[in-house]
Length: 159
Image 1 (cartoon, rainbow, N blue to C red):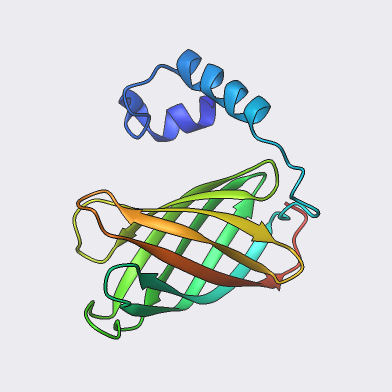
Image 2 (tube, rainbow, N blue to C red):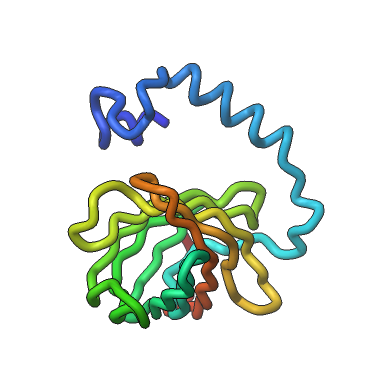
């Protein structure tokens, strides 16, 4: 947490919560969530991702491509791009930050191209399939959908 505070001074990105509040929330989350459905935790490492998102309202299908994801002790950061959507969305770059909780519950915040706001992804890591799948929402309107991203280890790492 200290390193996080150094990188993001002024509590930016913490929703105005104090570090003590964040610690309390983390403890509550870790005791409320069960890893019973998680057979194999997501390993730290560097991954190449491909996959897709699909909007719930109109079926707009947008492929993910050229994406690199770094996972280190439950924290995620990534960068890549999406192809054009089947109905709308131009090809655009995306940046991710996220967390892996209890080894398989994934929360990702995405900055997509020049779009305002963030896309919020909540999903589950499935080690058998090598995928993260779940639902997303856009924090700017009621847009929601589903996603599936396949993760391929890029290099072995002792992170």
